[in-house]
Amino acid sequence: MISLISLARFSAWVSRSLTNSGTYRFLNVIEIYGNKLPDPVTLFVIIALIILVASALAAMTNVSAINPSTGENIEAVNLLSGEGLVQILTEMVSNFANFPPLGLVLVVMIGVGLAEATELIQALMRRALSSTPPKFVIPAIIFIGMLGNMAGDAAFIVLPPIAAMLLMGLGLNPLAGLIVAYASVAGGFAANLIVNMLDVLVAGFTEVGAQIMDPNYAANPAMNWYFLIVSFLVLVIVATIVTNKFTIPRLGKYDGKVEQMEELTDDEKRGLRWAGWSALIYVAILLVLTLPSNGILRNPETGSLVSGSPLMTGLVPIIMFLFFIPALFYGLGAKTIKNDKDVATMLGKAMVTMGPYIILAFVAAQMIAYFNWSNLGPIIAIKGAEFLQSVGLTGIGLLVGFVLISALINLLVANSSAKWAILAPVFIPMFMILGYDPAFTQMAYRIGDSITNPITPMLPYFAILLSFAKVYQSKIGIGTLMSALLPYSIFFAMAWIILLVIWFFLGLPLGPDGPIFLPS
Image 1 (cartoon, rainbow, N blue to C red):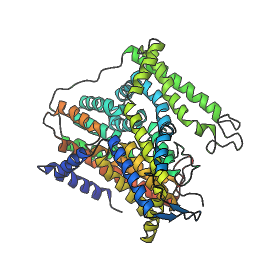
Image 2 (tube, helix red, strand yellow):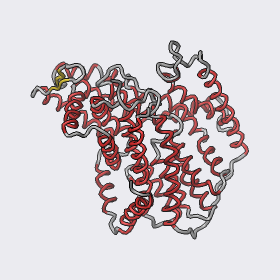
Image 3 (cartoon, rainbow, N blue to C red):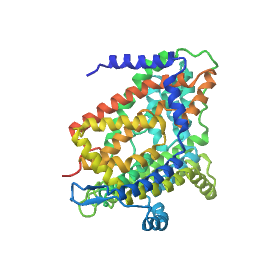
Image 4 (tube, rainbow, N blue to C red):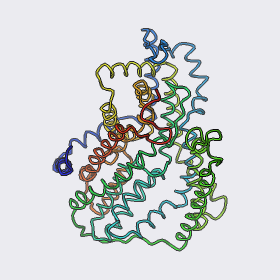
């Protein structure tokens, strides 16, 4: 196995190569071609039109495939026929209304949105970092950054400037705080200790993709949870090493004006106390409902907490209340909420931010429906699986390859839900035919989707990070910033892929209802 020293030298070499390049050719190519791509909504419309045309051509040329499990001959369906056009028109509303990711994400966003609006998330981050002993500051920033993913995109904006001021107060370069905080939030996007909105979002698209092969398949948002917890712990260690060995030494000392982080007000401290107690009471109630053998959140027939239990089927509202209740009590304690009208207003503003996602979901729902109706999904999956089997690429190499493909696509299309909406209907059925459970394919995608997040300029928060950095170094450029983030992507990729391979060979479940292989 390659030694850590060798990996470190390789990472440093790549980083120096980018830093010393006068034109940053590699970075410029990504930025130029990424900027030429259409908006995800437009991209879905284009793909939907391609599917319609492809369905007609496939039907006219009698394209078909034999389902290996049933022996059924699956033929392509022409959606540009009269019958197909009627179906497109009459089922457009139901496609959207019944689209699993839509309702799941909107429900969770009720809780997350209130937590953002009341400023609970910001206060938690400031409190956690301000009370951390100096020698644990960097691991704490990384820990909070990865944990902050459960709050959606707020951590991208809130944590980097707090981390910068904190490291500045310790006599370190504030740019190091920006870099490590951003890398932790972006690169560790698929690692967490708590099932959160991202798990719900990707599971929705996974369920749609898996139902191409198994109409009765139901995705559990927690099906990657065990792997995510271990990933979280591993990446905290890896990011700490990278920060101490690369980031801080490379950035050197800071000679500018030292700023101090604002202390929490008495109202904010009271709000955090109320939020903490309310969260503890809520968790205690959940434990009372789950731990006893006759708990009402267990499967009433088998007593299981996983298979067919109300705990798993009701996981989305449980997550929503996990955010909503502490946020409500924080707002009351911190006086950011004065009455019920404030709550309604905050929730309304939170839903306004979901407008772009709702439009994206509408177009994605139509595209995926066309893909299903045309039978192109199972045909491509069967043909693709047959090809992979013929070349012998069906083991862990296939999954690692899929991780790397997802990582490369992420450099150009940083919208996680948009990518998975496109990839899931193709790769989930294909890997199911090869015997892999959708949970495993989903996890491979999520790793690839995360590891190149720190270095892609297509992520909208990269521009915000650059503006933060210019406060401390006015002439800093995109290449300099990206070269500082590159070691995180490299080491995250190596550590995560190694962990996935180990998990694969041990045959461990990825989470509840999340095996590696489909039941035989």
